[in-house]
Amino acid sequence: MSITTFTLFSLYLSTLSDTFSNALPDHPTPYLSPVTFFPNYQNMLNTFKIFIYEPNTTFAYDSPTQSLFHASLRNSPFATQNAEQAHLFFIPFPSDLSRVVRGLRKSFPYWNRTLGADHVYVSCDDKTTTDSDRNILELRKNSIQISCFPTSSGKFIPHKDITLPPLSVGEGMTIGRSSNATQSFLGYFRYDGGGEEVSQSALAKQMADDPDFLVDFEPSNEISFTERASTSKFCLFEYGSDMSRIGEALGLGCVPVVMTDRPIKDLPFTDVVRWQEIAMFVAIGRGVDELKHVLGRTSGELYARMRGMGVSVSKHFVWHVSPEPYDCFNTLIYQLWLRRHTIRYVLRD
Image (cartoon, rainbow, N blue to C red; front, side, top):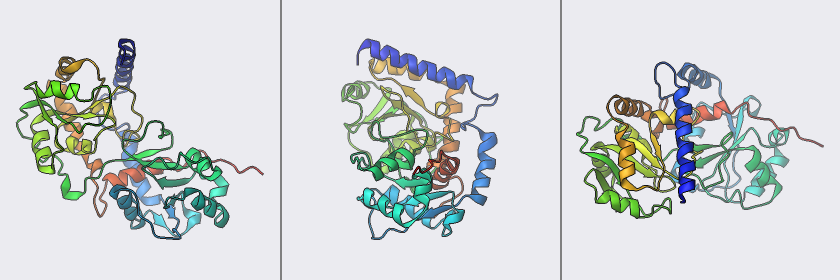
């Protein structure tokens, strides 16, 4: 990345940080609007309904997270068999998306009256964007897509789409498990060889040679991740690579640091969580010394506040086989509830 590009991106990060800082309430909170979130959540529990279409044939989703969301929705009190009382309509489908939408258009009145704007679907690949068929174009433009995080570049529309946080089921993620562990390292980085091409292995090797950092060049199992994250102040994630444990890092009291060279629009729960209060976002390009300088500025009371708020919101990132209040499934449903009054497209003759 050129110096000019890096400078512009750094200025963007600084401006973004100032914007969020100026918007903070008198008492810092990890929530965008705690005054509205909690009463709205209760309102959602009492009123929100989703109609689930029944697929003509059995099929399997691409990931366990998608399957768990679908199963949780079917067994939840939000599911209704009365389409007339539904706020949204959920579409479970196999690979032939055009055929599915065509069938909905012919067999039900609900798609046509909004051109799919009150419909929801889960998709974690790019097959919805490779077809110029009218049905798929309407699906992508109008319907709410629930995507896996992180999403492919350009495949996420922030005003309507949401993302599925990575799967951490029940006891697989214990909030604050080692929150009192001695933090021997400034940062922990689990390098898997993916992510931003600009860094590749250069930054990882620099960190590996620095005693302030702990670097894994091989994927860690759960026990080693828990131990290593618990002994580090910051957990570093390269955006576009393996960010599957960012929720676990929050729960373990390891403040996430997302390293990226571009703005991020698809963070989980952006309608609920004030990410700048619980995580850091740094540009890649100036090496380990600059990284240490940036992390070093977040210390003392500021660091303790970020860490504590991260632990407090980590409950939203936990999946349970049987959903619990404020867990991942229910927080996802809350984001759908916020979109129940999305733009309705009128069918023109």
